[in-house]
Image 1 (cartoon, rainbow, N blue to C red):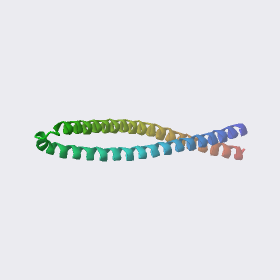
Image 2 (image 1 turned 90 degrees about the vertical axis):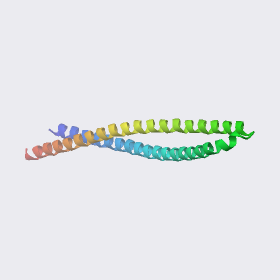
Image 3 (image 1 turned 120 degrees about the horizontal axis):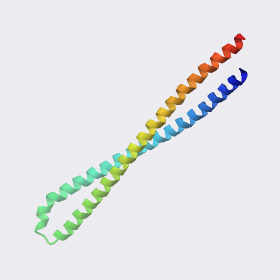
Image 4 (image 1 turned 135 degrees about the horizontal axis):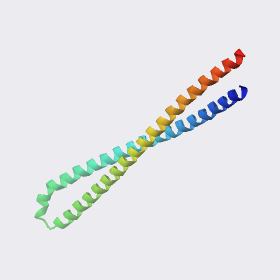
Length: 136
Protein backbone atom coordinates (compact mmCIF):
# COMPACT_ATOMS: atom_id res chain seq x y z
CA UNK A 1 0.00 0.00 0.00
CA UNK A 2 2.85 2.34 0.89
CA UNK A 3 4.59 1.52 -2.40
CA UNK A 4 1.44 2.38 -4.29
CA UNK A 5 1.23 5.66 -2.44
CA UNK A 6 4.89 6.46 -3.22
CA UNK A 7 4.44 5.46 -6.86
CA UNK A 8 1.33 7.63 -7.12
CA UNK A 9 3.23 10.58 -5.63
CA UNK A 10 6.08 10.06 -8.10
CA UNK A 11 3.57 9.89 -10.95
CA UNK A 12 1.93 13.08 -9.73
CA UNK A 13 5.33 14.82 -9.56
CA UNK A 14 6.25 13.59 -13.06
CA UNK A 15 2.93 14.84 -14.39
CA UNK A 16 3.46 18.21 -12.69
CA UNK A 17 6.86 18.48 -14.40
CA UNK A 18 5.39 17.52 -17.78
CA UNK A 19 2.54 20.01 -17.34
CA UNK A 20 5.03 22.77 -16.53
CA UNK A 21 7.07 21.91 -19.63
CA UNK A 22 3.98 21.89 -21.84
CA UNK A 23 2.79 25.19 -20.41
CA UNK A 24 6.22 26.64 -21.19
CA UNK A 25 6.03 25.33 -24.76
CA UNK A 26 2.51 26.69 -25.07
CA UNK A 27 3.67 30.13 -23.92
CA UNK A 28 6.46 30.04 -26.51
CA UNK A 29 3.95 29.12 -29.23
CA UNK A 30 1.66 31.94 -28.16
CA UNK A 31 4.58 34.37 -28.25
CA UNK A 32 5.53 33.20 -31.73
CA UNK A 33 1.92 33.53 -32.87
CA UNK A 34 1.83 37.09 -31.57
CA UNK A 35 5.09 37.91 -33.32
CA UNK A 36 3.87 36.37 -36.59
CA UNK A 37 0.63 38.33 -36.31
CA UNK A 38 2.62 41.55 -35.90
CA UNK A 39 4.84 40.70 -38.88
CA UNK A 40 1.78 39.80 -40.94
CA UNK A 41 0.15 43.14 -40.06
CA UNK A 42 3.32 45.02 -41.00
CA UNK A 43 3.54 43.20 -44.34
CA UNK A 44 -0.15 43.81 -44.98
CA UNK A 45 0.33 47.53 -44.34
CA UNK A 46 3.35 47.59 -46.63
CA UNK A 47 1.39 45.75 -49.29
CA UNK A 48 -1.50 48.22 -48.95
CA UNK A 49 0.93 51.11 -49.36
CA UNK A 50 2.46 49.49 -52.44
CA UNK A 51 -0.99 48.94 -53.90
CA UNK A 52 -1.89 52.59 -53.30
CA UNK A 53 1.35 53.69 -54.96
CA UNK A 54 0.71 51.36 -57.88
CA UNK A 55 -2.80 52.76 -58.29
CA UNK A 56 -1.40 56.29 -58.27
CA UNK A 57 1.17 55.27 -60.87
CA UNK A 58 -1.52 53.67 -63.01
CA UNK A 59 -3.43 56.96 -62.96
CA UNK A 60 -0.33 58.78 -64.14
CA UNK A 61 0.34 56.21 -66.86
CA UNK A 62 -1.84 58.02 -69.38
CA UNK A 63 0.19 61.20 -68.96
CA UNK A 64 3.48 59.39 -69.14
CA UNK A 65 2.46 57.48 -72.28
CA UNK A 66 3.24 60.50 -74.42
CA UNK A 67 6.64 61.19 -72.92
CA UNK A 68 10.06 59.77 -73.59
CA UNK A 69 10.19 58.47 -70.03
CA UNK A 70 7.51 55.86 -70.71
CA UNK A 71 10.10 53.06 -70.70
CA UNK A 72 11.32 54.18 -67.30
CA UNK A 73 7.76 54.20 -66.07
CA UNK A 74 7.18 50.65 -67.31
CA UNK A 75 10.35 49.49 -65.56
CA UNK A 76 9.24 51.20 -62.37
CA UNK A 77 5.80 49.59 -62.53
CA UNK A 78 7.44 46.20 -63.09
CA UNK A 79 9.55 46.75 -60.00
CA UNK A 80 6.46 47.73 -57.99
CA UNK A 81 4.58 44.66 -59.21
CA UNK A 82 7.58 42.47 -58.38
CA UNK A 83 7.75 43.93 -54.86
CA UNK A 84 4.00 43.44 -54.45
CA UNK A 85 4.29 39.80 -55.45
CA UNK A 86 7.14 39.28 -52.98
CA UNK A 87 5.03 40.82 -50.23
CA UNK A 88 2.13 38.56 -51.16
CA UNK A 89 4.39 35.50 -51.02
CA UNK A 90 5.75 36.56 -47.64
CA UNK A 91 2.23 37.17 -46.39
CA UNK A 92 1.17 33.71 -47.56
CA UNK A 93 4.20 32.13 -45.86
CA UNK A 94 3.33 33.97 -42.64
CA UNK A 95 -0.26 32.81 -42.91
CA UNK A 96 0.92 29.20 -43.33
CA UNK A 97 3.30 29.51 -40.37
CA UNK A 98 0.51 31.00 -38.29
CA UNK A 99 -1.80 28.09 -39.15
CA UNK A 100 0.91 25.57 -38.25
CA UNK A 101 1.50 27.33 -34.94
CA UNK A 102 -2.24 27.36 -34.25
CA UNK A 103 -2.41 23.59 -34.89
CA UNK A 104 0.59 23.01 -32.62
CA UNK A 105 -0.96 25.25 -30.01
CA UNK A 106 -4.22 23.30 -30.14
CA UNK A 107 -2.40 19.96 -29.83
CA UNK A 108 -0.35 21.22 -26.89
CA UNK A 109 -3.48 22.62 -25.24
CA UNK A 110 -5.25 19.26 -25.58
CA UNK A 111 -2.20 17.45 -24.20
CA UNK A 112 -2.00 19.90 -21.32
CA UNK A 113 -5.71 19.43 -20.58
CA UNK A 114 -5.31 15.65 -20.65
CA UNK A 115 -2.35 15.83 -18.29
CA UNK A 116 -4.31 18.10 -15.95
CA UNK A 117 -7.17 15.56 -15.95
CA UNK A 118 -4.75 12.71 -15.28
CA UNK A 119 -3.12 14.73 -12.50
CA UNK A 120 -6.49 15.31 -10.84
CA UNK A 121 -7.33 11.62 -11.17
CA UNK A 122 -3.99 10.59 -9.62
CA UNK A 123 -4.40 13.11 -6.82
CA UNK A 124 -7.86 11.70 -6.10
CA UNK A 125 -6.49 8.17 -6.15
CA UNK A 126 -3.62 9.22 -3.90
CA UNK A 127 -6.08 10.76 -1.46
CA UNK A 128 -8.21 7.63 -1.50
CA UNK A 129 -5.19 5.40 -0.93
CA UNK A 130 -4.00 7.65 1.87
CA UNK A 131 -7.44 7.48 3.50
CA UNK A 132 -7.47 3.69 3.14
CA UNK A 133 -4.00 3.51 4.68
CA UNK A 134 -5.09 5.78 7.56
CA UNK A 135 -8.15 3.64 8.21
CA UNK A 136 -6.02 0.51 8.46
